[in-house]
Image (cartoon, rainbow, N blue to C red; front, side, top):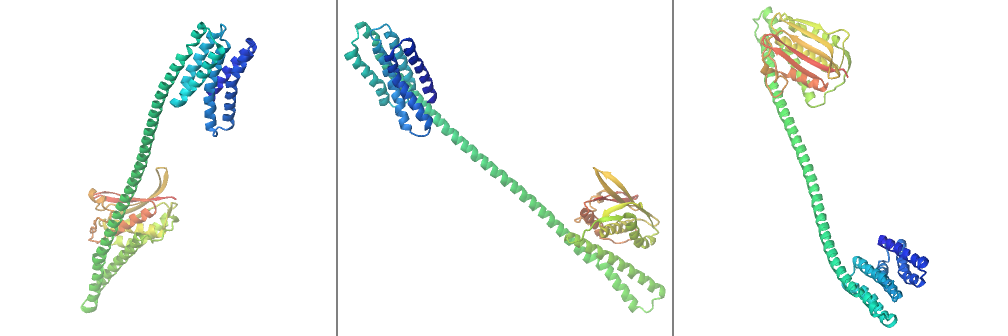
Length: 445
């Protein structure tokens, strides 16, 4: 509205200036001044109150339609007996067409906008103007043009209404489509969230199932050790001690042999109980873990001293090749348990006159530094199929040693548990009848 009024006001101001300066027609200025005043008043009200006085603004806008027609009809009356009549009629016809394209009112009000100025013009023409026959023929063009203008406005109004209705329907459909799209996004988001939750629940269930399987395997392993591996040596101790008490005919050599067997059974049972307790604490997550810097050679040598008497029974040599200056970041109790179990395992599966070597070095792997400690033997070795089962609690791979030593497989499981607590790694390489190498990687921090 502001743009239309502004352009109209500028054009009207130009004609007022032309009437004043060029034609010196003060009556022409007065005729044009009426619509100009209404336009300026409407612009001022609209500028000061953009969101108020809508009915007043509408009435003033309708008044401009009527004032513009009256202005042009007044110009026709002003130039009725002059040669400027024809241009004035042409101007009036042009204003009628322009108005017909802009009016957006109902049929009755539109008819009034066209009819009222025309009736006033006709009455003044008859009673005041008194045109000649020639002048009447020129003016007569205004009447059919007014009717055509009204018809054009009604057609334009209906087309605009249909277009508005179509646009409204289109907007409604767009709103519905947008709402459906928003709902679809929300549903998809909820479905994705539910899928994520379901996947998390599934993963949690699978994790719990794995934990339950591991707990069941631990329970079975624990019961198996108590029922078999712990019962047998205790049974041997009871039997041999009964023999010493009952049989009075035993000589000194037989008694010494029985005492040695009892001592061996007690030591085996003691080691087994130590491993059982350590393993139980590791499973229940209550084991103490206090890593610090230690000299690897010193700790390895202390453990080897306690194990060499077992090696001497099979005439097995044990070499400690750990560098004297090598420092390792570890929990001392766990490290000693790992060395004790790995070397005991090597003694068990090494033949008479065999060799065991404990080696260590610093290595760099994947931009990290590790202390690598390995226990190598030249014993019986293992088949490839057995290697993958070594550190799995669900697998029962206990095998008798080269001198029929019994075992539970618990020592290697304990080594794996303690290496996991260190965030380290343990692995084994082995060849049948050539020996095995168990390697542990301890992070340096």
